[in-house]
Figure 1 (tube, rainbow, N blue to C red):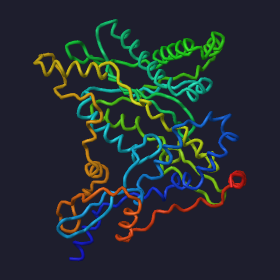
Figure 2: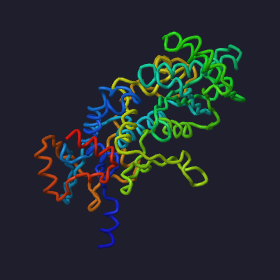
Figure 3: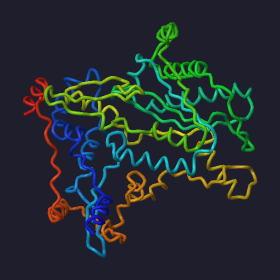
Figure 4: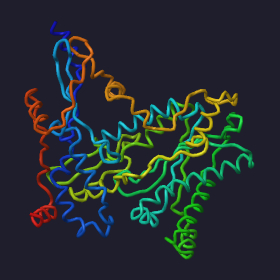
Length: 435
């Protein structure tokens, strides 16, 4: 009996603990000091502190915290009970909620968006000299993505000699480099070929990245000239460089829909990876490790910052509330998918993928919290680990006092983040001044 109980207990849903992470601890104990000293230290290098930053941070600090509101779940048979804390649903800042969006997108894209044809990942980057325009005006990040799409469309039109062949493309706007530096770039998931008006797929025999890079460079410079952000002299100077700083890397190719979904998940990933962050008590620094290379070492090296510099880099990548970070073009555009769906419903015999489309991404929100947990951790949180009965959600507790009392009755510890001690001298000076 003990063995059975032990085996069952390994399948118990265990809530995450955001208060133990370096990100949460840094924001809890130092965000107010960061805001107080932002203008003096970071205005010149990071620009003004955007109005969306403070509301996003305070929402994140309530995410996953029992005392800020919970759902109460109980087994009707054996009375086993646990709590599920509310989430903030933020992009870019909260790794947990961002992963939920990633999973929702992957499920929707695999079932309703992507065709079962070869796809290619193309990463478009711009010179450091031009990145400042995108830091101060986040709206033109969408136009940067548009430049990437037009470059691909022009290339494929020339490749197929002007024939009516339409590629499907999804663009993902990212602002973070490997070590949380501000690095605006666009990942594009594009069909490795295009679709004819009859629905047949024509593949590419080769992909010329250099040609696409030149087209992308021309589109970006034209856009910046139209907005009067650069002059003809600056454009001539950029074009005179031996290495332009623009790139269109398109070496990664997958053969089927599942491979395309995996690529898409990589492109839409959260810029903050908690397992790469650590706190070094001896120096009072946050350490960020780059991705591991095939040789086992960090690919991008590592970076060390005092806690305020770390927070300045983190808030750089919080998207504006209305900013669209995923774009759809060509065969995958909303209008094109809607047209094919209407034709299918009207009984049109035009060949299509045979899958019902849905223009509203929010329809995937029908995937409940329990289904997402099953997908990630292979644990069913609504199946009682002791008697196997289906657990029920009793209530949603919104009152702070009631949520705290229920947490105490279940003997759950308070989620109090440990301070990041031994801050560097310049951080201590700022904290003393703000006090």
